[in-house]
Image (cartoon, rainbow, N blue to C red; front, side):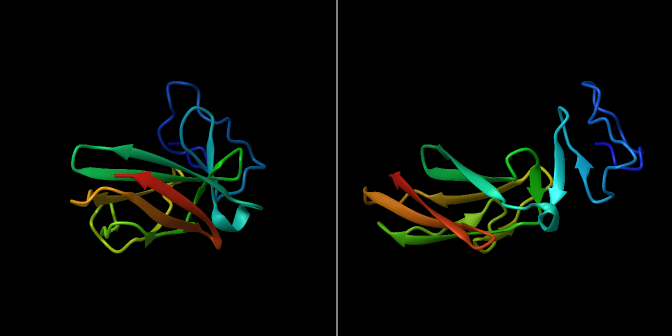
Length: 135
């Protein structure tokens, strides 16, 4: 990771090309991609990527401004409908998180004994989207 002042470890791909005009709050992450704080993002967008395991479901929420990762964005996940599940962060805390410097917040839940559709409302900075999963 390269900090805007030029210190830090450079990536093998050449880094982000940090220049004097780069704000000090921007971080170089990988492959020429920057991570910017939520305050610098005009319209943060997000994508949800679910991964199913035999006994659990993990889903990651990626927050970007369509060019750069956004860190510090509040992300929450709450169940709306379906068989009752307990949604937590990947570290088993409350279902409220903050996106990291890779723009990611990860949540998980154990699959219920009864089958059906689980509907989860994912909110990022006041914008919401429903995630529907068949379990």
